[in-house]
Image 1 (cartoon, rainbow over the protein chains, first blue to last red):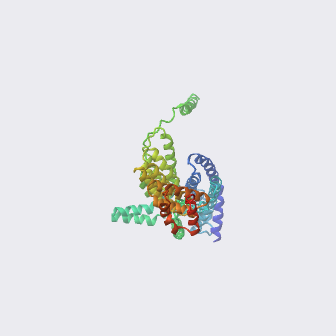
Image 2 (image 1 turned 90 degrees about the horizontal axis):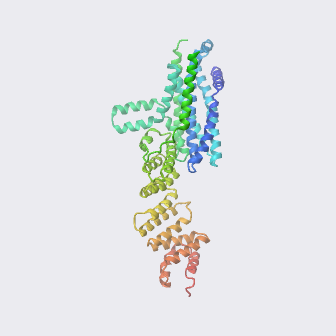
Image 3 (image 1 turned 90 degrees about the vertical axis):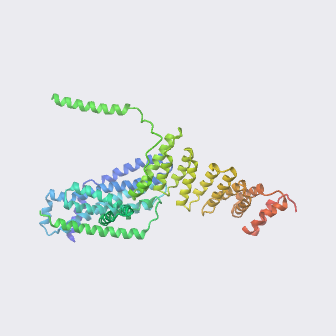
Length: 254
Length: 249
């Protein structure tokens, strides 16, 4: 446990030192300029536009940070050869993966909290009404990105960092679509494609199930019980993927 | 050395060329009246998490398209744009209202009514949709004037029945019912306005009833008699007193 905590703290410090917090500043600048521009062209729908585009931007920026840092975490240790020093001590591979993941969870929490709180304040100022749902939606984006991070770390134990990043982004996109693709293939009534898409649906994390962005602009009545269950499902998914990553990593020779 | 200088010169020439062209090129060619608008189904199937963001983006494009083509009146893509935005975001009220007026400018007021009906189906608790339907039915209806008035009255009455709707809707419904030849309904509606209204509404109700009720005392009494069961005795007596002022005992 102490080993995991040490790796977590070190990973957090290391990633924060990588100037990822600059993302918050870039996000803030884009949102301020974008907000003023949207206010002039949206016929009084500035608040709605800010929330919608703001949350999409939080997702986009968050995804880039999550995927690219997660993909490089393990490789960096191997390339710098710090992994040899680490594993010469009584540190298990599982503890290494868990510590790396938890450290990155902390970094992502800081990044998303920064963006979410800024968006919340900006919407409050420009729209004249505060919307707590913006923060809730940001929290759900955080859960989605944690899942993508776990998957990216898994891929990074299998191949190169670039491949892991690309696959991480692919999983994010597929996770948004898997449910709809399954429904579409059911319409085709072809048992083979239906079975295949069902397998994909089960393997790919169902990220769209915890998406509440539409609810922020009053477009969707949210079933909180269902969302809580799907959130628990995503955390269970992360555990499975991280265990698999640890198993793969254990087989690596250093 | 010469090679290096030639390389720098080439880069500089390219940079100057790029800047000069950007700075001096003619304005953007005017956009065509027909814009490419994807099917709402495509986005509904393939963007479950971002459909409202896409709706917003197309809403902005729709507003811009309207502004660019309003003068020429060539708004052929407006119906598809409005349909796309409201299908992706069925509770986007402003898109419906803006779309309804834009469609009339595009010469398609029948589609405005359909659009508002779609909005009302998606937002049954919002009085704004039947209120605008009342206006569009009255203003752009395809029937005779009396039929349009009656249709407008029916929508205003539906809007007035929705909790939170403003009091003037029932007054509008009553006025149009009277114009549309539905005097009996108009009497009942003016009665409702009177019973539930403030001083101003009561004045409007008395004036409205005075316009549509017969002048003959007995006929007038017969016409307002049904109102007795729709309001308190005190209100009814006050209304009768105002309606029969000057008629003598």
